Picture 1 (cartoon, protein in one colour):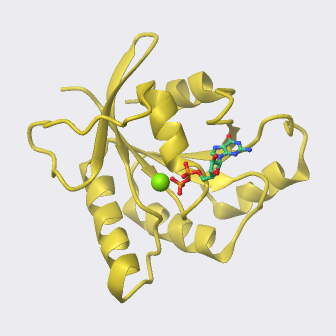
Picture 2: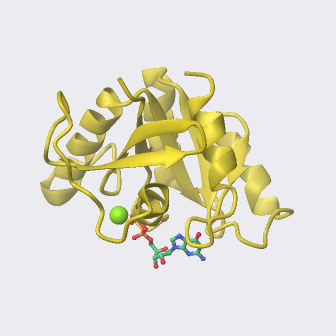
Picture 3: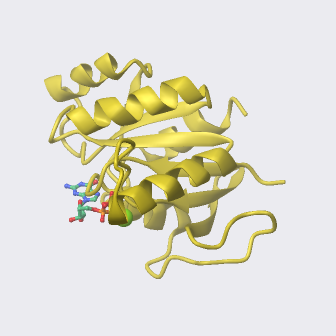
Length: 163
Ligand code: GDP
Ligand code: MG
């Protein structure tokens, strides 16, 4: 059984860009993986020694109670339930938001292995923005650039090697 990685985070942080980078596809693959629900976005990924399944999700709004946001939150919860490891994507340029705190609280309660990835970090390795993500209580932040490919290999290793 390949490990399953779920990409979680508020809208617009770059989850789908990271998904495409990990699966190396523009038209993200929707495949029929045994035992996994069909209504989310699954892809096959291979990085070095690691072969795994990635789940892309809509933006997560854990406190949403209505409409599309509630549906996205539900799907995200299901994706996280199916995953062996969660990659929580935040926006290195925007800094920490209230929504990031909500998601972090949800993930900490869950106790599933979680790696924090600060996306859009191209050319900002020394930014103070990266340090502020420690306040989410999920440990060290991994700077990545999904659109440029930087840090993606480190992220994959950090997420999958402990499994
Ligand atoms: P999602 O809503 O979390 O799935 O985010 P998307 O993948 O749709 O990306 C949202 C926006 O962020 C798009 O305009 C992307 O081009 C942009 N984006 C994604 N990754 C990066 C990155 O690494 N650096 C920069 N500068 N922009 C990015
Ligand atoms: Mg998306």
